[in-house]
Amino acid sequence: MKGRKSYFIALALVVVSFGLSAYFYPQMPAQMATHWNASGAADGTMPKLWGLLFLPTLTAGLLVLFAALPRIDPLRENVAAFREYYDLFVVLFVAFMLYVHLLTILWNLGYRFNFTTVLAPAMGVLFYFIGALMNRVERNWFVGIKTPWTLSNDDVWKKTHTRAGPLFKLAGGLAALAVFVPQYAIYLMVGPVLLASIYLTVYSYVEYRRVTV
Image 1 (spheres, rainbow, N blue to C red):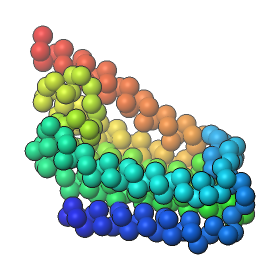
Image 2: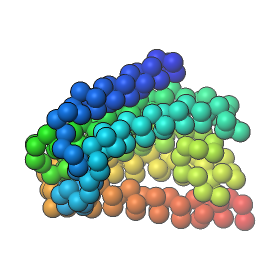
Image 3: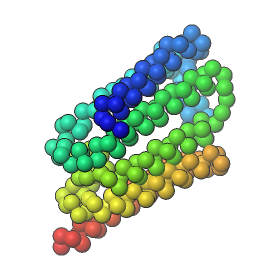
Image 4: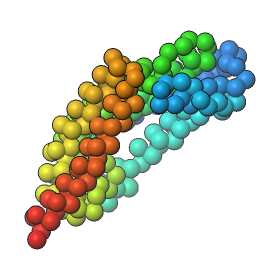
């Protein structure tokens, strides 16, 4: 997907998000549920104006940041090598945020569901694509497993991200499976990514020591 096209799609999704907020504003309660605990039950509220504007505004700000990062990265020539996948990730992330916003609106319209469980498949898709991105990412300052050791050595970067790809894809698959075991959903959504991140950090240090000592 070409850069301009992907950002046009992402911007259109942000506009849809704001449009949903405007359309459903009259139907929202004065205090909207906007936060859910690990078991999927609502445990936090906001006034409806802020509840409807928070996620679209946050997404718009992140979209601007995502667009700027490849331009300000000192290693921008490396970013160009995986730019197509990076741009597609941006679209998927914005779509994910729109999905969360839609779930928030539906809940406040009176529909009841386990928020964590219905979020799981979308998180699974996002993590799986991050795994695909990891397989292609070149050394840079903003995207990937950025430890002192990966950033200091191209071989360590490549080996770490070769391992990161399958691990994040596995984490995505496990997160998606959480829909079938809601009592363990939060563990399947967070645990594998956390463990993978810890493992990859340690691996990058060990590999750096191996290739430089």
